[in-house]
Amino acid sequence: MYGVWLLSLELIKFYFSLVIARCLYLFLKITKLSSGTSVIGLIVLKICPDFLTYANRFIKRQKLNITGTNGKTTTSGLIAHLLKSEGKSVINNSMGANMLSGVVNALSLQINPFKQSDFSVIELDEANVAPVYKKFDANYLIVTNLFRDQLDRYGELAVTKRLIQDGINLKDNLILILNADDPLVASMDGKNKIYYGIDEVEYFEGTAPKESITEEIFTCPCGRDLKYSKKFYAQQGHYYCDCGYKRPDVKYSAKVKLYKNHSVIYLNENEYEVPLTGLFNAYNALAAISLALELGISNINENLKTFKVAFGRSEIKTLYGHNTLIQLIKNPIGANEVLKTIDLNSNLLIIINDNYADGRDVSWLWDADFEYLKDIKKEVVVSGIRANDMALRLKYSGVDTDKIKIISDINKAVDYVGEKADNNITILPTYTALLKINKNRKLKVKRG
Image (cartoon, rainbow, N blue to C red; front, top):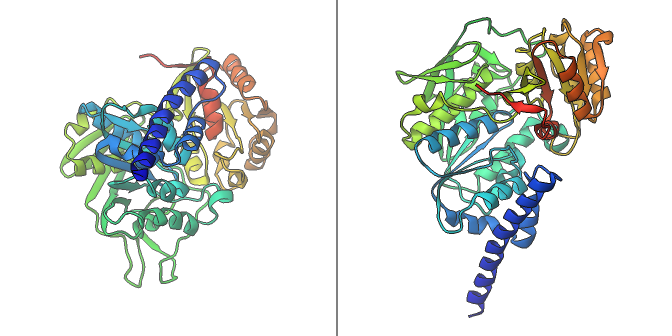
């Protein structure tokens, strides 16, 4: 009898937390005190510590997760879009809040207490796979890549890999969708592993990659340096070692053609056109397509064409009438891939914060190839908590100091760039800076 009473009390806490979550969301939306991507989750967990355990019953079919250093938000967005286009109901943390509180935040606001959703598509911070998996079920996990990121939280890549592996070890029947071209990801342990990878890349319309200024060497488990028959960027490519170790056999092996405004992925005699640019986004799209094929989703190519990018991930808005491209940067490899695509004739704003969600350690600025900007034609405005650090990095990268302007206040910097711009604008923010500018009413969604 006591057990039944206790269970009823916990259920009451769960449903009460759903009500509180909705009320808080409305309050934050009206007052604009917070973006509401995590704070609601923190409060929900205070009310109902076992929230994730009870949330399981509200997902009818599959629970899908994405983790890795870069590409989580875009990949999860693609998957959610493909499912919704087929008429499926989906719970998705589309704003990219991927720590435990962010996951609970998304679930508490999207769970329908009277009806199950078909799927959950949840991206997970690398260090939060295990905390979430302790109470929340999982069917598939995509691991996109492992790059150096937030050294204050993760340390070396071996630590990041172990954090993800700890989560994988909690789920015996979990099906892993792994990037075969990343040797760290490909070496993840699991009973059920499916690999995707790129076999060949062709570049069109001036998209040919710039040579990387910095390079990192990865070693085989035997201790020797890995060799590559093909290398695409960072450590991703077709690797092997004289000891016999090599890239695993790939189920979803694609040929990619990159254009200025889109990409085309050729896979299993099918052609998929994706409205995303850059090789890094081709990897994201390939991961999403691979999972979609595993789930038996139809009309993939038709529905991919209507995908809209997540905020801050190659998103185009308007600022004072000017096309404004917003590209999140948060670690050296990701920043490098973005910097390679920068229009040196655009008006550039770089916003660097060092809040917890950004990573307190901004030494990564010195590992990113900001030398790509040394021939920038216009003034470069730097803003955010670490604006001075960014200005110093630009100075040492060869950018003319007369072209570097520091405006620490983010909203004032956005206004300054918008008012002074004479053509397109590019904004490169870290994560919390992205949340800040997303609330700026002068940055408007581009129509048409």
